Structure formats: C-alpha cells, structure tokens
Length: 176
Image (cartoon, rainbow, N blue to C red; front, side):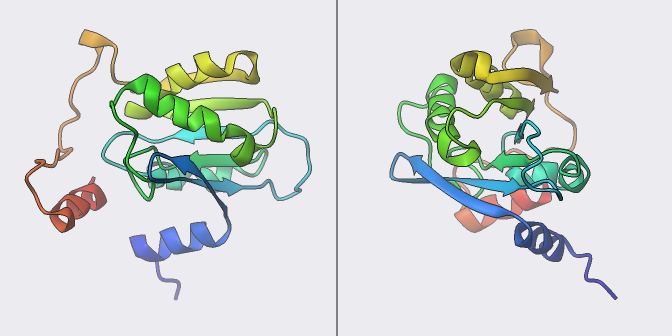
C-alpha cells in the first residue's frame, strides 16, 4: 500500500522535479521544476507562487495535473520554505526582484511564462509581472493580499509569534 502521508507525498513530488537554486541575500531561492511528460513540447511554463507562512507545497495538489500540458515551476519565496531570508530592507519589490533575477536560471534565458500567485504570492506576483513586462504573458492572483481592505485573514490559519522557537514556527507552517 502506498504511503500517503504528507512527508511521502512531498518526497514523491520532489522526486519528479528538477531543483534549481538562485542567489538570495546570504543563500538561495529554491525553485522546483516539473517538465511536461513530453519534454520539449514548447509549451509556455507556468510559474506558481505560494502564500505567506508556507512553501511550494501550497500547490502540491495541482502540480501533477497542471504539468500534463506544460512545464510547471514553483519557488519557495525568499524567507519561506527552503529559501534563504529575503534581503533587507524587506519589501514586496525587493522580494520580487530576487525572483526576477533568478528567472533566466529557473525558466531559461528570456523564456516567457504565465504566472499565478496565491495570497502573499499574489502580492509578490503582481510586482514580478510588472518587472518582467511582456515576458509574463498572463498573470492571475488567487486570494491575493496587499490590496488594502480587500484582504481578510483566513479563518483557521495560524500566524506564528516571532518569539517562538524555530521548531514551533516550523510546526505551525506544516499545519497551515
């Protein structure tokens, strides 16, 4: 019987991905890249940006289906998931700039892409789409934050207190 635990599901998905690392402050942004089953199909890659207090795994239930017809790329946003902390001073434009600087390595030199951002990833995605110009063919924000009164806190999502130990913060992120 297949192990369907969250850890096994993540391991299976990562086992089918190409991992790319690009510079981010004192470390790296970690990108996960899934090719289409017929690699080289020429389809435009889809870049998925996750929400705050999370990682690429916000998209885990969507990747297999989406990658049937096009390459799918996720990134652990700077300061989240397996990526290094975002550079100071923290700002949406600064975080988007780190991603923009890694696009050629993660997607291919000058490669056009479509972009979807969820929650905090929607806020960062808007900045990234603007920086990328025509290279970003389409942009969709899903439950995006940062648009003043339009965003509300999702019930049931835990927000870690900065005073918690790293292990406690990691447990909250896994639960979310």
